[in-house]
Length: 77
Image 1 (cartoon, rainbow, N blue to C red):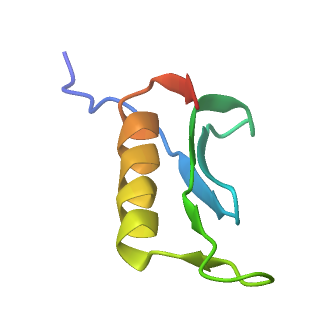
Image 2 (cartoon, rainbow, N blue to C red):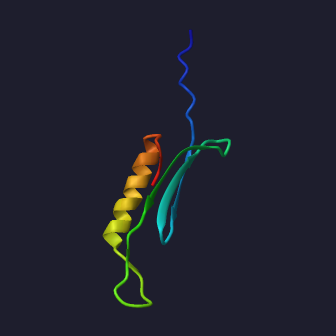
Image 3 (cartoon, rainbow, N blue to C red):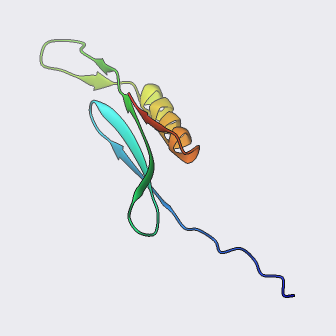
């Protein structure tokens, strides 16, 4: 009997950081989505005609969507 190592599965984690949402997707080798996650980002309107985003909030959302996808959960906010 030969000790064979199990085949290693390869996946791609893709992240889309937009103005209103941050989304992450995990694709398998056949380009099928096997997990995804999305969170809304908070926009700040300091004055008329201006929009800002808090970098700490963006980073937190980024980490959340990646972790959620990596856990294999389908979560859309």
